[in-house]
Length: 238
Image 1: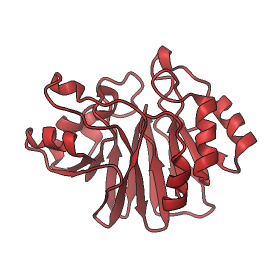
Image 2: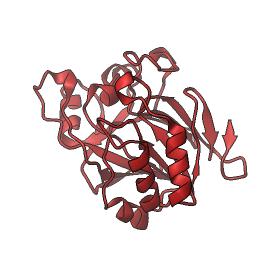
Image 3: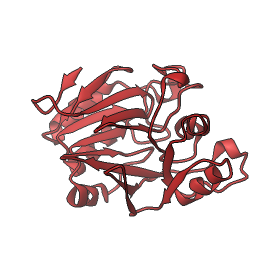
């Protein structure tokens, strides 16, 4: 456990592997991109997860993951782009659909859907449903703002995300091949100007093998952000 802002706050951020994070804030549990049962590096079992809200960045199986089974079991609300929302409604799942640039509030927590430079399809649907666009989220509560980039390349409007939403924490993919790599992600940190940068979406499979220390070294040369390289299953307090 790490207290990253120098005091014991009320928000816990846990990395469950790949791009899956859990945020516990003010009695509400948010699960982002719950790729668990097919994830060889996952740190929890499905039956341990009881989220109030699931946020899905896009429909690829390593992000959409176990959304359906978790939501059907718990009755939680899924925040996602409109097209994925329509698919989930066909499964009788409660959703709060939105689109790029949209803002919603659930349980006092603000969700802002940002752009991401990546493809999207609902793999689970067997190509029967359009996956819309890939996205990221800025999630804001109390005095903390967390940006989860989803799968993306580095892009210039990350500077705009910084100016509009001032993320304290930026969670960024570094795996390469399907997203930006460790070096490109450091340029994303330079534009986003967070206090904390956390790498994700790496070393789950050989094809996205990366050394997160390279990310940390490059961030240090470009930014004043602190890099936290989390262990799967570990958490930080914000």
